[in-house]
Image (cartoon, rainbow, N blue to C red; front, side, top):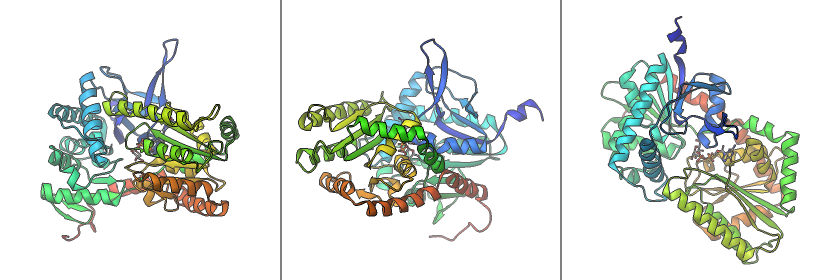
Amino acid sequence: MGRMAKERADFLVIANRLPVDRVVHPDGSISWRKSPGGLVTALEPVMKLRGGAWIGWHGASDEDLSEFEHDGLRLVPVPLSESEVEEYYEGFSNATLWPLYHDVVVTPEYHREWWDAYVRVNLRFATKAAELAAENAVVWVQDYQLQLVPQMLREMRPDLRIGFFLHIPFPPKELFQQLPWRRQILEGLLGADLVGFQMPGGAQNFTQLVRQRVGHRTARDTVFLPDGRVVLARAYPISIDAAGFEQLSRTPEVIARAQEIRDSLGNPRHVMIGIDRLDYTKGLPQRLRAFGELISDGTIDVDDAVFVQVATPSRERVMQYRKLRDDINQLVGRINGDVGRIGQQPIQYLHASFPREEMAAMYRAADVMVVTPLRDGMNLVAKEYVATRWDDRGALVLSEFAGAAAELKQAFKVNPHDINGMKSVMLEAMRSNAVDLRKRMRALRKQVMENDIDKWADCFLTDLASVGESGQSGSDD
Ligand code: GDG
């Protein structure tokens, strides 16, 4: 085989970001570090297992890098200009689509220049993939930033098998229809052979919109295109490398560090922990208010409980995220000021990101893990917590509005909009007896350990390989 042919890939993942962040050391040298966030957590083990190449932006603007290897992964950077970062990434992706797809938790902004940049950048990703993909390769496009890529790529390379997976919720039609470019997005996604969603509801929203807005015939999870091609729309609830996470949490270093964390908190009766990207979808203010009120109204004593909230810095140049950061600072300051005592800050707030080992130690240190998004595609933090509880101890408080709630049935469920409800469920989780907690945790662990990320990828890729084969053409709904 010639050199060119060898460089082409049979399996390609395309995501907005490469799975690494650049670190500049004091001596000026640079290295790359795995970046936090759900998509990376999920796909990194898949890529390590299957090989192939990962196409994505490397995180800095106005810089054209050639491909490189990191930790066994073949990484292919796509450049973005400063204005594209503003208009395609911070603008259309994170100030239009992100809030629209998360139930308009904040108001989405619609700007035509942002859309133009979104089209331009999607075309750049598609072109790069078209160059790199071997004949008949499998290309797996990821997430809301790249919804036009499937169609663009199919036009350039009809030989490819194209899958798409949306990591965030796909909204109901009442919301999606706000989008001035709704039809283009639907048609963009229909370029894929298989469109994957976290939840069955997302897949149904999509096929319904395709029927109504694009006018294609659909039957259950199948869309029939006029040219005879079929597209499947199905749910694949994403997961984690559950065994790997459990293994990490069993190491003597992590176990010792978990104890050290509890000691440094003064060994209170209840250690509650929240870990999230600092995002307005994650319901941080609501849970901190609920916890603060439990102390201020005397239900729990400030000596008995500590809430550690880790908020990983995220999208810091987007206005809504800066505002959220200020709001949380203020809220934490107010609660600690109102109910704290000397040496007793009931909320320990950390605006920082941590290595995986430290995350595992925090999960091990938490009696109660509090996960209360207002809307979340899945939520991997909830699953990671469960994976580290190999002694069947600990309690998970989980929002009904996280995709994970459908699978993690034995969690303590909350409606994050209902502060009183949240207070009583948090209290129930704190006060439950060991037998009840163990029963719940066993069931949660069975679910998470049996449905890991390998299974998720296998299901998706097996279905992707078989789209269009006989047996899938159903009748009209
Ligand atoms: C999107 C969807 C969906 C966080 N801080 C640090 C860190 N993390 C890791 C966690 C976890 C991941 O980031 C966060 O994943 P989530 O699923 O909770 O949330 P999103 O980032 O919003 O992910 C979500 C996901 O995609 C996958 O499809 O579940 O619904 O919104 O793995 O551990 N990791 C490290 N340091 C940190 O400080 N090392």
